[in-house]
Image (tube, rainbow, N blue to C red; front, side):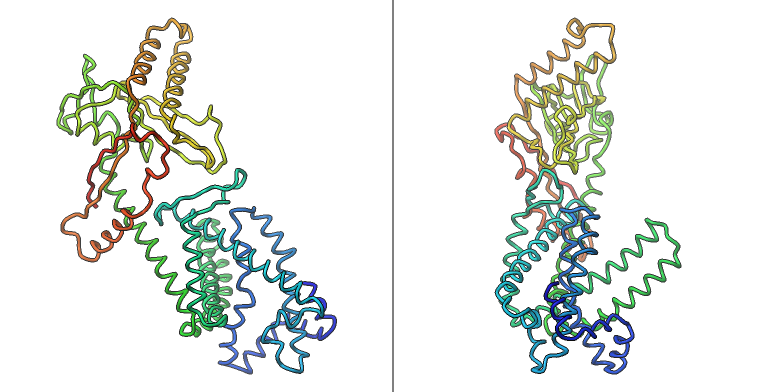
Length: 488
């Protein structure tokens, strides 16, 4: 900003006339096709400013708006205006070759060099952070396989670190720098990427204005046409740079888009297959008048024996019978004495107090409870003492549940409460077993070739991506995996 003010005062202040759209229109009319082609080069004047908005996950929307309108935007304008003032009065005609360093005030070259290096570091860090945040959102929407995510702040949910993504970005940066022979080709690639993002953003904002904000259709169409025409002119000019380097970003975006769509397509097929085994507990087990449990007639009607111990069955959904429990009961014709359907529900807060973390409900199966653990992104839930914590909160729930329903009797002298607590305590002393599902997927026979190829690629990525067990910190000696096959 200071350099811009200095050059504007020392050289040619008449460049301020460029704020008038008349001169831009006159330039395009005079130069026609060459003027239109020059628009692709102008993209480099504002590429990079989007790095500011990449930190939306770390800062609030209001902070981004104020910093942009009150600081970044005025500084950019003054810097470019000052460079234009210097270039317009440069007799040698060499200033445009490196306008930033050629236009700094005398004696401030090394200071400007330090500032430029720091700015590059800040901009690159903003892009890396933005990449992490966008990737986290894509994973939450099931458009990308799960990769390790580390939350680096207890105050801001968006401040995260992804080791694998960070290494891939580093490798990609080195490869791109080595492949591209000069900064002009790299600038062409970057410019096409940015103007595509701008055009897509214009289209998506228009859809949001119509569908979500419920604005008048004609008003939205008017503004859409204005901004779409402006973006379209720049985009059409930038596409002429595709043979000279811009092809790289188009190819990379096509590959990433294919992976995102492919993963979502595969997950939807997986969910459709798993939905067939989602039902309420009474659809799986029935209990006779003598207390004997057996499968319903839909599953063969076989009697089910009880095994001493507590079985914690991990559940992804949280409102139906876990698929792993269904497979366990059908394969072994047995059930643990105490059954817990364990479901984890992540929240976008740093931590949840332990007193508010566990939500427990009874099911229609005797001795079976549904436990939902509400946890923040800094809470460590799957710890070696998970079984002890689960039993403690289960005992607390049983005590409170009977106290609230039968206030006339004392908990200490209630035979019903004592009997239930004794069963839980004995089961916990006998053994603690964690049961997870090991789901293998196959493709249905008769699937057409194109769909089969897509599903085969999805299954290959699924088999080589991070597993659920990678995030678990429980005793593996007490872990049981029940394998089953689902067709998609």
